[in-house]
Image (cartoon, rainbow, N blue to C red; front, side, top):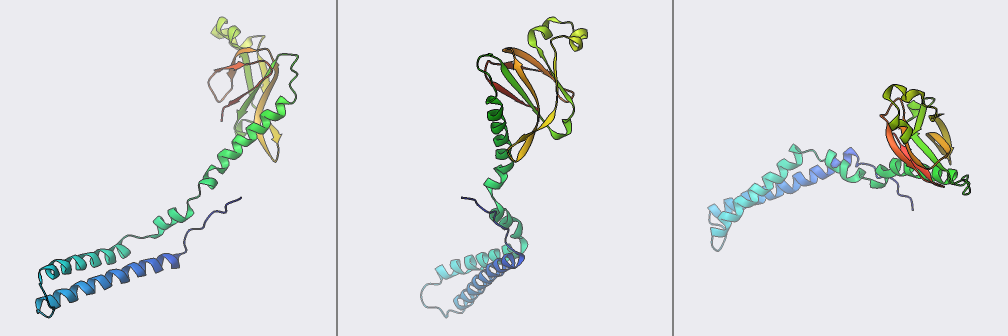
Length: 208
């Protein structure tokens, strides 16, 4: 069942709440003052001890409620309470995860189990489309001198493209038919990192 986001309370509703609080505070304030006056003139029967205590308490409480209604605006607080919508906050994150799940399922359907190879999917941001991702077997990377790592014959190079997934897309570079093992992934926007490739599996590396 879908949940529609709740709108924050309008200004009139916030003003109405403040007026109600101010009215309640004023009523308590007047009640306390009346009790103090009647007690001071001896017009109330019984002991005045509890009246001498209750009267100031009521006056202080009424003053506090009345001042709170006007000194502390309620609109930001009510806006946070009424507009809180965890489902809406999690929607972009859930949508991104769903796209990657669908992408994995789509590529897995094309895997040939007899080849015992794997697939690496490198996910990037939109601004990196048309840039290149390079992967090198980690053994070749480690054994090569730093000056020759850019000219290794074992380097695989793929452009970052927008891959259609359901009603959305993902910016990815897809490396298919990779021999199982460890690879170094290189890009212009990220430092080199190691990633394992397993037979008949799709490995997704999210660089966003």
